[in-house]
Amino acid sequence: MTVFQLLMLGAAAFFAFKIYEHIQTLKDIEQKPENADEQRSAKSFSPFSPEALIEKADIAYEEKDFQKAVAFLVEANAKEPNNPDIVFKIGYMLQQSGDDAEALNYYKEALELDDANEYIHNSLASIYRKNGEFASAKMHLHASLEINDENPVTYYNFGNLLVDMQKKDEAIEMYQKAVEINHEFIEAKEELEKLKVK
Image (cartoon, rainbow, N blue to C red; front, top):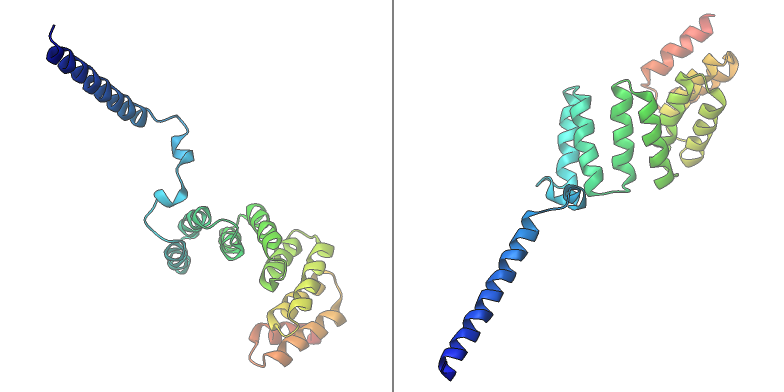
């Protein structure tokens, strides 16, 4: 073999090796591990931003499609984890759909992320009241009032709790406070009238 033929043979071998390497790289990409989908970021699943997903959830909520709303919010939560507003909204949608147990879990998670949110405390109190856990409900309503003592809804909810606890006079005070803050609070006025008649 001449020197030229040896050079050509070497070059051919080198290019053959490079082509082999390239093919192996392509095969490695094609042969994804079984959990490759789990390894992909949440951003690759949908072209929608968390904000767009929240808007879609709000539309689904208005249409009373709570399951769809939850699905959009869960996806938003995957794209923007540890956002207390998103976690709270998931809990709220679950509560609206009747899944109080799961809603409670999301409310607790939201509270861990933002313990100064009066609406989370109110929502937790609502579920605890429904479950007959009055002490826990009362604790969260007090916490809500510490955050904002000018929210008539909190006083209304507190009044409802006190009615369940058979504390009529205290309930009247709470309903009166709700009406003082919001003179147009019809539900609070109605509850107040019921208690005054008894």
